Length: 348
Ligand code: ATP
Ligand code: MG
Ligand code: MG
Image 1: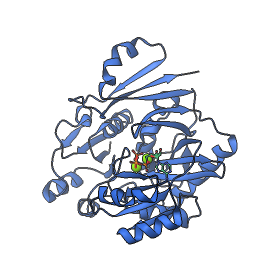
Image 2 (image 1 turned 90 degrees about the horizontal axis):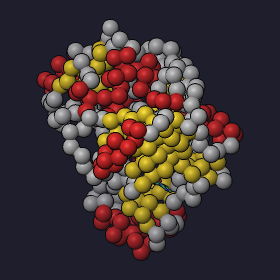
Image 3 (image 1 turned 120 degrees about the horizontal axis):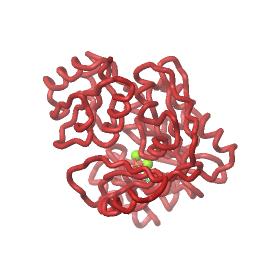
Image 4 (image 1 turned 90 degrees about the vertical axis):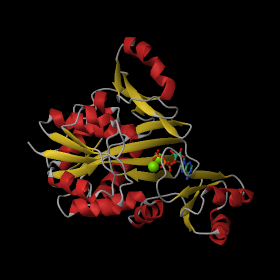
């Protein structure tokens, strides 16, 4: 069987490795950090930084193709790998999702709705952006933000100076605040043959900037369910995307507004492990390996709940709950704010 290289050895790399193994495939993890959760279940692990040309070259030569579990891979590392073996999803998809300004322009250019936004480079551009977008607004770093990090809320224009200082010179965008009723996400997949499959959108609740629960089905009319599928397919087809993507959406009276896209398996898609015959991890492996996709059908309603930090203390009680599947990532250290595992509660 083929060997799939995975950049990043966190929980997503771990669950991708398990899915690959079930399909008779091997994974080779590349991860700079020690004790990566994926190491327990992968066939091979390289522990080296992303600027180690020798290690990257050997890694790329040992696999048939490369995928990744996070967006912030240095361009130089990707150049070295891509000279040797294909990367899925492709570089354009990765580049688009790495930078909020590029991402917003892309989404707008293909006719999708996004929050009003502006490129912020200094005090003057922030001032004029506030004048046109208004407040409340959110200042976000263009790159490297996750779990709400690198963001600053502007309730009035007086907050501008402090918000910009918080960015510490990092390139940023200002986004108008979207008055959404709920947040949903759609997990979509596309294979090299152009087949597209979507899961039912999930309804997401965040706590302290981190995903807390995903509930499927989301409380949305079927019209919006269709809109979500169509816009996800448009994004994937335009990018000639291969793999699974998470698309985060705001539900508003004016319809769906795209918040951001993630070119990988997504935390809000973990429910598929116990709600679908083919979950998002198997779907991603199928897509990048050129297999037919699972159809995205759902056999059960599910509520996924993340186990963050001290939530680990709840595991003994969760293990006794009926219809509750426990997924733990085998992380060596429990830290506040760290994703340690999740549970999927089957509702019907
Ligand atoms: P993730 O961990 O999902 O990658 P992130 O750090 O990239 O998160 P965003 O998804 O951009 O951050 O924002 C985090 C949360 O902040 C959103 O899920 C939403 O609740 C809120 N938010 C972000 N942008 C807006 C906006 N323009 N209007 C209203 N709320 C917003
Ligand atoms: Mg994000
Ligand atoms: Mg987000």
